[in-house]
Image (tube, rainbow, N blue to C red):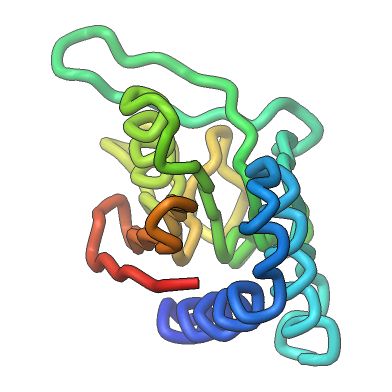
Length: 185
């Protein structure tokens, strides 16, 4: 089983390489999807020859869970809970093949000039994606894939500020924001 520390270390190493080698993408102010694709390649480079990641894949905009659309269970105060279809910007997972630990890393990327509401939704999505379970509505028990996506070891909110040439990183674990970091590029 992969630990939070292992996934965090993998992400940080890939991100450092991404920021160091892909400066032209930032200078050209390319789309979030292009940036996610470039970061995906860096993560892929780190896992491709590491046998402990055998059977895991890095995907951009992946939206399937057991052949159906990926969903999260969104909770609100009161009786307003609902199921929301999602696709995450970038994920590291086994594509449903490793039931004991399918989901390792979820990244939501935004540019700093995007609407506050869009950023809020990404953060809420990472909280839901990194939860182990919620009131027994859905669970990640290692015996079967949960109906709604959960159980990511690490969630990263990745906000790019091209004007300041900085990246805000927020790290999520077990449904909670646990650490923030700022990096220059």
